[in-house]
Length: 562
Image (tube, rainbow, N blue to C red; front, side, top):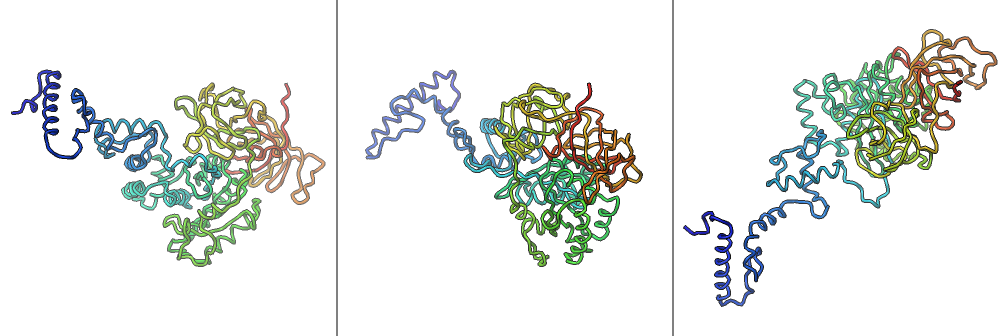
């Protein structure tokens, strides 16, 4: 047996054996009468036989290079893609697959991938090149009666725009089949927690994003059920655009629209929350009772228009109707042959073609907080209503006047150093504990603080209330993202709906469909602005016993008497 095949007693010995063997080889090579260049193995330099020991390490190195490894910071695209496809889409932690899954051999390659994965959060979309103009951010809220198909349409859009891969959906479909709920699988892309999936009802406002050529959209999937209307108000207050989903199926449209249905209430709340443009999606057109019939579509349209007009939308400019089917995806991205009578653009191209929203990036910073949690510090979520925020900036949290510093900024889960108005942000803050923040607090810049107080005068419209409303009436006030109990302390005057004239005498009560100016007092200090100065933070709804009673706008803030 050759001495080189057995393990040596010590490595020095081994070295010498190799070296002698190599010198023999070299002399043999040179002895050959061939005009070719002298052959030197890649791991030996020509003159130093001592380098033979580096054979082992070099071989490993060359093996590593053959793996798709990161070189000087550039990620190998194919490597990352396989990594993403293999990992479960709903994993929080990056790097969660075993090495067998990812198709990498060798621990070093695995470790490198892990490190690289931790360094950069993995957005599903490739980050745009730095010189590309930033896409406009648009927040779209899906509203409508329970079971109209809001989450399903949201899931279908995410699939059509490539935000959810086919494999994930197949997994959802399998799981849904096991629960005999196979038509629900699309909505599971947005209804992520167990309770929502078991009952098939959205509870919290789901979030997801998708991009078109010109814009970056955030989907806010609001709950349709009447018990969760407060959550829906929080969702609508972050939106620029509302999509009212109604079901064309016989009987379902009617229940959503009758007195207790959520179609009416949601449209009204969206208007109060400051949504200017409404797209009405007539969903479930593929249902056997409808079968893409134009008559049914027109019937739904005729019933809705007068009501939306009453809420304050202008049918000519602010409302756009379109038929679609969330289950099959017809008329969402491409127009469908099933409905030749609809000539407009399908849903996603229509969103893309809408005019841009005007927003002031140099205005005062206002970021109403929607939610907060602990994650290596305090993290808050919200939509930047005006102004722009940069990393490491000092801000003030109102109404408690805590000075905080922005440690990091995530816009739709992609880290940035700077964010403009209209973006949905996650901020990691320093200098404040999570327990000290409540939804409805507002981040401002120190030079221009937002107003806070407990007493204010407002103009309110009573929408639905059986009896009369007198001073001393209590309700829940929803203003931007804040919920607070308020009491109507005084009615100042009635306002004539047609002429806008104010009554000379103080009314003793107000009833349904009247407009009045009243003084309200909140149970605690809240942040608000007058409607004239800052519409997003000056409009509100009053709710009681699970119904929306009134909508209104803040006219002036009353300073507290000390």
